[in-house]
Length: 489
Image (cartoon, rainbow, N blue to C red; front, side, top):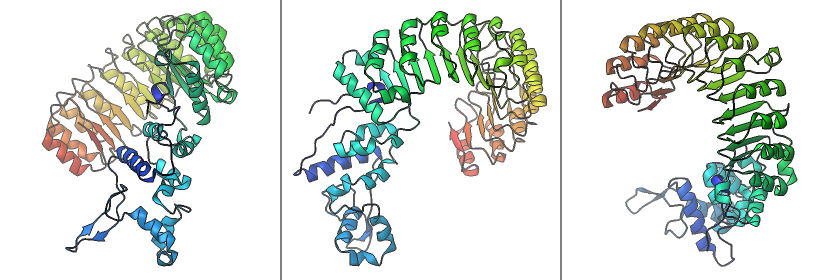
């Protein structure tokens, strides 16, 4: 049979791979078992028995095996309920398959399949939905796809006919997706989507992402007109969208906005955002041409709504821009200045003194940050729970001594902080609430210093990649003394 159609990058089937027939019980169950064995990585259902020598044997879940497997035993017990009546264990399991009397009926029983498919990851659910119509009907229930964002790769779909695209849109609608990612889309693709997607789907979509797409201002305007419920928008690598397009398309209902690698994004873009989006809760901005002027557009209008601000690789931002920021947005809870290379200790002092509600702070790839900035953080940001300092090469053991006094800090990332030594690691051992710690690339830390981390009994994740001191013996020692901790080597 020919290759089935796929739904872009999400690989959602639009056709059924195999058709059912009444005389194909064995071949169908074999196919089903093969698919599930692949998804469950060789999982088998075992029924204990005795071999000739008195040892225990187990039956495979594969139909056609000589042994009697547990599923078949349950079905036999259904035929003779008197034998199962005295066993609470069997009664409980029979409730799972209330109607199945044969192995084929079991594979088609919706109640059994619903319970089974809950343990399959979303990628494999898309594959299993091709086994037969019955499986697809079960797997297309919206509860199996809740919280996921399918990706439509329009670069691949350009060769597909209109019927294929229509089938994809209907498939997405049946599973009640409320998020959608469009990859490589053009204005014509947007027109096709708005013209042919079901009305229920158009009204349901609340989150839309456009990545590496060539849409223009007109396409963006049509998209917002056809999807009236959008509240989260992402534009990544969309170089044809201009400030004028954003002024024409952005609506006050948007609460989350991400702009990344869009060459036309500059200070005027931020001006449009601050004036058009009064309910904005989260703003993610990666723009190389944004300057301190952009931060001056924030006003008391955003004071109560904007809580998450990520300014990544905004190379032109300086400490002066942060002065405008802290007075306009005193209620920020998460702030990222990753890659803002002109920010120094003085800028961090401004943040620490004015943004007392911060729970998460990212200063990675800020080469001017030193131990002095960590002293300001430790003194004033008492509620901070997560701190990222990757590639801050001027941080030393003295700075870690300041951080060790922060009782609420749960996650600390120190990747490639090349001046950290064993003495600094021993400071961290005082942080009893620390749950996540990354020391990747800290080449001066030895096995002796790392061994002291066993004092952090609440540690859940420890990253030690590219650490010279992370020897095999040390890793084994850490596993023995921190059995609940995930150690990334």
